[in-house]
Picture 1 (cartoon, rainbow, N blue to C red):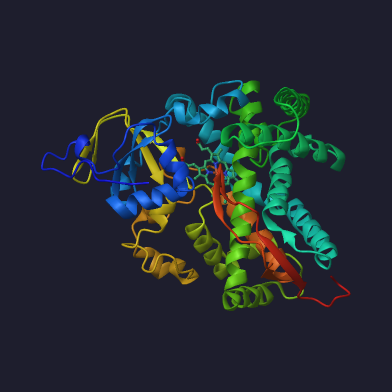
Picture 2: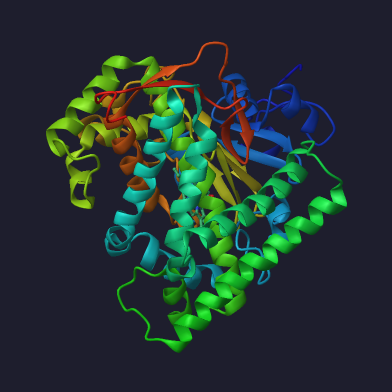
Length: 461
Ligand code: HEM
């Protein structure tokens, strides 16, 4: 692909002067040729600088901003461009939660945050998270002797279990029902992603569409059952129950069904890949892995898992996770629609423009991250972090549409890493190259395959 500057910055700083690639078309061919939007954003910014104008399918022309100081001008925008997120609309009954207007979004976000961001809800679900993480470690201990483990597959399944338990609370009453909920959700998501990325799947399109519709109807019915149970019984007032909190906040049953589905969708691959990429980096940096396990040993002693209160005493683990999400941001980009004219450094961008958040390029911006490709968790020590602009690190996005699940995701990921690193050594399996691709999240094309050895005696593994 030939990228050429067709417009150079001019004295008037107008939109037309923002540098970017030439060419007609909607930009899809260039994105495909670069190996995906995540790679394309890196190329564009390396070539044209921190503000780039480029054709983005579904948005006509977008402006991508990779400088954290310039990003501040966009940080209060509370609208996403409809077209870019319309692929999620068929999964929603009450309007697309990604793009509902700010006036509707604000109270919904407040209700969601009152549960997701609160320590009380993390503590209330922690024990169940521990059981699920330890269950995976037990299965891995049994399987690891025979063959390598596919991290993304198993860790995404684990985070889906966790979020089901979290979002449905009393709804997932039995392990059998939890299994059914998980597999219904996977049917819906697999079909959705296959359509979005034009991936070939077995079976006819009609059969798969029918199956996905049935699965969606089943998931909605499960949420309705939980809602009915809440209406029949007293409402817990402790902000640990998502569905109860949404009902108390006056959200409609359809909006609550959509919220549960959207939460599952936003939570499970993201958290699963965050843990997978962290283990991938640790396998290549055994000295860092050793330091994490020393920290774990000093805080946990012989205990196989942390308590919720222990997490704050694991600062190095947290730094490792953050550095991993810098190098492999699970959600590699976001977008906004400018609601008024914006000044981006020397340029003026009119209202209505799609603003693109190239999260990967922001995290690799050499101006704020010396030797950006190097894995160095110490970047997140308090004194180093304080030197950087606020928006130099944005794995959970920016402003009023940023991720409501950020705090919960950190709890889940730290707990999972603590359990697994305490139990196993990880070594990359040969002949399985790891290639990042964008599949809604920053995924590894052929998963991340690891050989595991137990850190405890073979009898315990
Ligand atoms: C490591 C894990 C996760 C990462 C990296 C991540 C990242 C992101 C990103 C980049 C966005 C878009 C933000 C923007 O446009 O500025 C987002 C949105 C969102 N995330 Fe997460 N997420 C994670 C886990 C979770 C979890 C665990 C939940 C819920 C339990 C969740 C719920 C959401 C929701 C509801 C949105 C939509 C925000 C809105 O439109 O108001 N995410 N996430």
